[in-house]
Length: 507
Image (cartoon, rainbow, N blue to C red; front, side, top):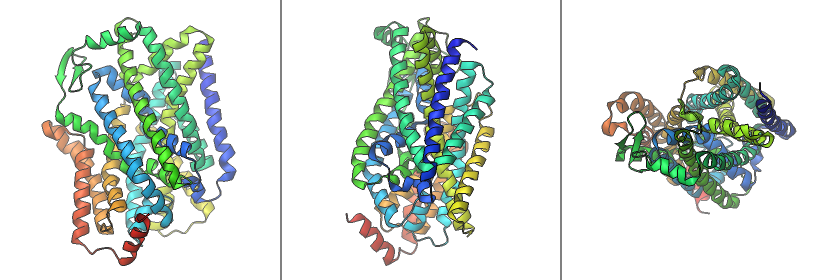
């Protein structure tokens, strides 16, 4: 291993030690399930904002998004980013305060438990189904993060893909198990800062390596359809390919998913003061817009560097930041340290999502399946033990699913995001804003949305044309229609539920 690689590795290891140290520090603060899953509802606005967005972006921000821009140009990543930016803002604007208030009113510390208590489901059928859906879709999401870690270390140090993947899976498990939500949220806040440093640093270096901003733009303008919002560049043929309305709607549809993402929604529930969510919303929205914009631009910069002879063309476009960072580290000791920080940023993006999803899935199994569905009353210590074992099991399955080094981070995240959004988004909206919504409607909407994701993805979408739209949109439409229809066709909620809803929403 070269001296440069040793410096990079030491920088990354120091970063990992910091994250584990936060976990050790917070271990004593984790005394019960509320602390482990929700940080005792005592998180500040900055931590809530940045941890929510760090856990949202995942390795998709620093690998998937630049990779798509590198390969096909502006349109594909732009419409997806636009949908996500709009969805982020609307989620913070409409959902955050009402969910924070309602979840405290019914004493719910997880999203599945909120559904059960909102609809007075005494048999906990809806919370158990919610937990099952979370596990089904979050496991591949976590796997995509492990895949990103494996690719990173394989590219940098020649480390065997599986070894690198397992190494970082172990690190994530350690600090998540140690400190629970407080550790995860604090580390996500730290990771959002590291991600920001990574984005700024690699953008600045990439522009310089390409020969300046003019060279970057000249290269982009020379490629047919590369900078268009309504078409994309086909790298294989060099031709411009029309980017139709269906694909634009598919990109924008990503924003719908936010209303159903438990690892983001739980951040709203964790803040200490409801009023501070306004500040959190502003911070989160600004960061997301800037971060995604810079990530897309990095893909464009990377292609300019490659086409201008600054680096070899990439067979795997999702490695563009890794390739640029490798070039940066050739410029001395400080550059190697900065390169280590940038690569730690990729790991940060990955880990900040994986840890949050593990925690949400663990809470679903421990609280909603074991204790509620199966009626196994656990002590606080036993409940936390079940959650920690669940995290270990999810990790093992995730490593198994990510064993293929050629797996696409973007495609895995896309399907998992659709699954969560299609299952939960419409149910959450109806639960918070429609007092007539009932248990039967919510359950039917949740199940129909989840099933439609699979049906559309594997049976309908391959037909192409209008049917080629992103599976999240038809799943959401089906889910909300079923939720409303079944609610209206079945018995309306009790007066107690109405009174509870009104007391929360009159503020």
